[in-house]
Image 1 (cartoon, chains in turn purple, cyan):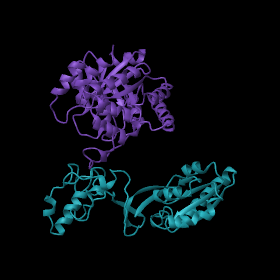
Image 2: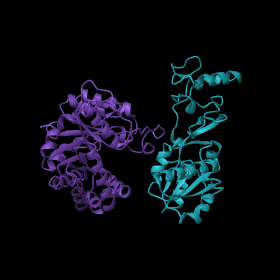
Image 3: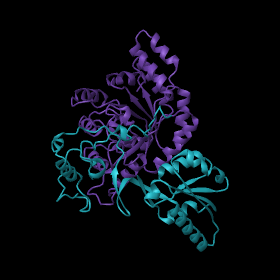
Length: 290
Length: 221
């Protein structure tokens, strides 16, 4: 069953996030794609929205489609104007890529090309409207298309700092759903109780809510996230647990697996980010009983 | 200077429709020079708004004031004695002035009466043309005093595009090709060799790519 069919029928969806290479060697991507093929419903490909220049998601999505996997590609407005975005969206359909995740780009200044010019012609709401316009058979200038593209657009929720911001984020997501977004992907949070509140709040919007689980790789990374990203709500207990484990790699996989087990009961889907450790994804899925 | 043009009157009327006491604030700097928001334009706009309200059978109380500089908190403070007696402020300054008033008087809505256009120079009486994009890393020393960022329609850095024709831009025959102007100027100065110096991809951070620009002069602050 396709990602779209599962979303609309209310079935659980499992997504894995995968990075495209910084370069043209796609051998790792292909080997990761092979062992994910029967284990996940779709693979999420971030684009250059991460702030790091790499093979774009459109090409990555075409590679995954050739490998028999369904891609979900990020779409964002920081680097492309409405002309380029529409052209790329038409290209996506032609290449067999129909699942989109409309996101915000990382600040250019935080990326690896901080001197680049920012475009920001259309924002997320504008991109969602653009997708609906193309699907209806015209471009943003009102010209008729030869052949209508089909897409399943979703959105990414922002990191949630507190309950006030949660209320605001749900309202923002509501406007995006009204503009055509069909599912929401949440940011990873390590505090299960607070994550439940977030999932509950977004569930009021009556579209599938997909929780995210992030594979911690080591104590240093966990400590860095804990200090620099308070929205992750990564506790000292988790850091201590990794530090005290005999096999820290396995412990990290187990922690991710436990999060997935808890979250899969209260959300319609899970997105797993392994940040370059995609070879650990089968072990994480095993640990989660998926 | 910063240039501006008055907004369509209907847009201004819509902004102030819920209010009956308006403080209409002009600025003595750039918008006075480009005849968009100085003392004279404040008087003209006030009259137009009065007429409109008379036609509608409504009352409106408009207090007119023109500050020396609306982008300077020191002068914006002069509005303090009047602010409690009005429902809203209409600013005829550029966007910098509107925001300075909004930052000072948090409980009173502020509406713009002009559209801020560009940083430009006066060509002749009543004609202004864009000359600077504020890119934060000026290249005029290399390009003979003519800016390719502001004056080339494609913002090209290394010579003209294929659309230049008889020294004019393909966007409009009324626009001079900036790179033709640069070439002619460099020739006049005997600095043609500058034309051969390739400019690398520009660093856009000083022009705002790193968020809103800020200048802190510690010797003055």
